Every structure is written in structure tokens, then in C-alpha cells.
Length: 399
Image 1: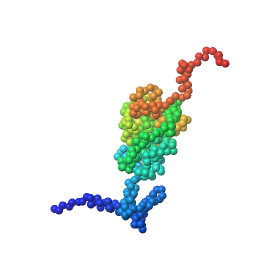
Image 2: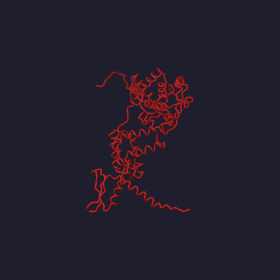
Image 3: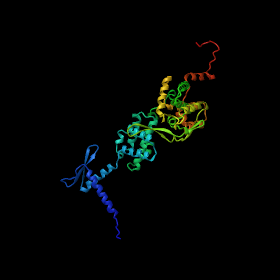
Image 4: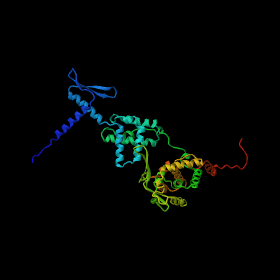
């Protein structure tokens, strides 16, 4: 049997020649020989539109053309790198559809012009300028800047991995000097963040007057501190005695048609993982009432066989706030109220962390703990401090 030896170098040479011919066909400018026997062509130029190229031989000019267009083909835009990075993360399961959609929204917001830049043309200084410009232009909080930074890390780390750039984005960002004063303050007054003592009672009384599924769900949030997405994902199988295991949450993302799609993610929001919340014994009637209304549903909160979505609770909460005459607050303010009540009553740090699903008490203290006392209650507390009590034993006044 005759042996056929394949000359790999010959095959590679043929491939390279085919690539050269393909690139030269795409070149939009004529290649010509001048009267001086030199060879000429034009190449695109961002500043002047085009620039003249001159070489001693036809091959020399073709080499310059091929090198230029190869560089252009291997120089994607920031947007192309972003899409590649985000799609890969979604494909591997590192992120879910809601996070993917949030990345796309943030990219569209921040990278309008910068996203069209070729990745190889961007310098380290330009990245720093871009980030600072975004902070000031969009009045970003530190949280908003953190979301932007995630995209910048992802884009430029992938660009370096693909050898489009040589610098490391982590070092670039770590070397930036950004004053905290540049960020928009996200700190709100305590009265905006929680329901105070009087408001809590008003909400409780109003919700109990009409104990339907949605109002009962809001009451359960007030007495357990669970997130509204977790409430919407509760199943009867999660309920045991006076405790509920929190192990899933509702997700929301836009489909290809631009409409919101609501689903259930079989994991919790934070790294703390599955946790148990305890229902106070005097609040167990809430669970019994929910069971009477919805005895056969898979989810604790179902109506006509359909799971109640988070927006149902949000809309109802706004309506109840209007009804009792207090400023509208989001469902997350209920959770902050719950955390503040635990802190006010000196519940142990370990118990608070477990009930809230936080990884440390600093998170609870910094982002959730608020003063719930009304001005009248504060005055009463101050009035009972011995040092502030004046001895008015006579009617003498100072002149």
C-alpha cells in the first residue's frame, strides 16, 4: 500500500495565500505603480479619511494592506467584547437571565459612545477618565459605580485574555484615586427608610381589616422580615411548625419581545444561602388563614391556580400607605423595619444574622438599622433622663 506523506508546511502556505487573496479582495482602494516605479495605495485614516502608502514593490504594499486589515479584524469594539463576555457568563450559568438583562441595561446606559471604540485604541488613562465621567454625569452612588465597575472588569479582563490589550484592568482601577465626595449620597432619613411605631400600628390594623392573600402576605413580611421575592416563591412544603425555610426567590427579566418574564430561581439572593425564619407564636393565625384561603395550591400564595407575583404586593402596599395617610414605601422598607425592631430589642447578633440571612452583623447595622421612634417618643425618653430634669421648686427667674 502506497504511503502518502502530507507536507504540512505546504498546506499552511496555501492557507495563508488564500487568506491574503481574500483580504486583498476586500481592500477598497486601488493598488497602482507610479511613474517612479514605486507602488502605492491608500489606507483608511480616522483623522484625515485616508492616508497614502508607498513601497518599493507590489508585495511590500500588499503586506502593509494585509497587516492593516488583519489588525482591524482582530480589533473588536468594546461592545463586541461585552456581548461575548456576557453571553459566555449566561451560557455557563455564572449569571442568570435577570442579571444578564441588568448588564445589558447598564451597558446601554453607560457605554453609549465608549462602546463603539475599538478595544486596542483605548488607553489606561481613557478608562480612568471614562469611569470618573460616568460617576459625575450619571450622579452615581457607590452602589451604582460598583455595578459599572463589574462591566469594566469583565470587558477588559476578557480583552486581555484574548490578547487584544496588554495592561491589567485590576491594576488600572486600583491605582485610581477617587474621593468619596464625588459619589451621590444614597443615605436617606430614617423616616423614609422604615415604618415608625405609629405607622407600624396603622399598617397592621389596616391590613387586618381585609385579610385576603395579599394583605396576609404583607403581614407575614412585617413579622418575619422576608424579602418580597422570597414571599412570592414560598411553597407549603417550606413550612414546618412555626418556621419557614427560605430557599428560592422570584426573578424577572425581559424576553426577546421586550416583555417582562417572571420566574422562580431555586436559590436565595445572597451568599448566606438557605435560612429559616421564625413566625412569632401570636402570628400563627396568619398561616392558618392563608391555608384556609389556599389549601391546595403548591405555592402558599396562589389565586385561581396562579402564583401571585411581587408586583401584586408592591401595588397593594402603596395603596394601603395612601389609605392610612403615610408616605409610600417599598416592600424592602418592611424588611428594614423588621431588622430595626430586632436591633431595638437587643436580639443577639447571631440570631439577627440567621433571621435576616446576612453574612455579618455589620451589614444589618449599616444598611438596615434605623431609628423608629417618633418625635414624641424621643421627647419622652429625653424627659426621663435625670440630668435633663430641672428642679423647678420656685418661680424665681433670671434677670
